[in-house]
Image: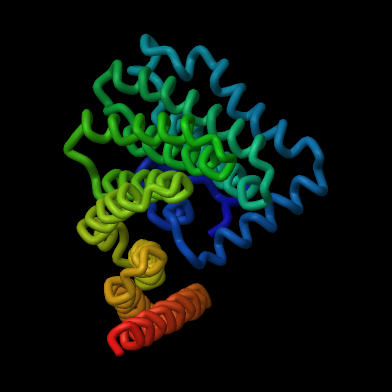
Length: 306
């Protein structure tokens, strides 16, 4: 689902937190929604060169709204005002992802930083009246900003904001399944930083943490059949990355085991989306690569023994 400004808005916090509204931000090796969103943002920006500035201004206007962010006024505030503000944040997150996929990193980072600032200000006011601290929003905005920093090759900033998200999660338990799943997203982005730094051991450690989180909580996010498929793709993506990393380190047996788990996950939960077919194709490519390298290794070993 690619959100549009003219779509019917969320009427409650629970509706705003529905899995289909934010699942696109969890790493997936195949996602038509991500691709459609990138096309949507590119076309909007082409038709309206001020699209980025207008999106940022919506966030900035909320940051300047003294009534919205005032702790003293929070107790009497209509909760729908906060829901509306968070819906604006969520729309900005989708738009930032579109810019990110279109390699407009500065725009993605700028929107991401502004979202973090706004959500933190909302959380401070919300917490003042014992209505929680909007933990889900603080984590997801930081996870997405971390992803933007990673792709922008700003690794230190990425590590800082992703560790902030994990620290918020650790300090504010018990966590919902959605919040725990988002910590897995943070581990995924941190593992990418480790891979780009050629630290394979750290990357594998972080991938294992991601997988542990996803295996424990991703199936609790939604029971809808179409969402089950997305959940399966999310977990299979983690298995695929783990297997690919093992394969690049010469551990082909382990790689094939992880890739087998990825394939099984997709086959059990595939529905009508072409994403599952694309995932199976990606998995098969890695399987063939691992089998080829395994065959070469066996041949070399046999030659050495003769």
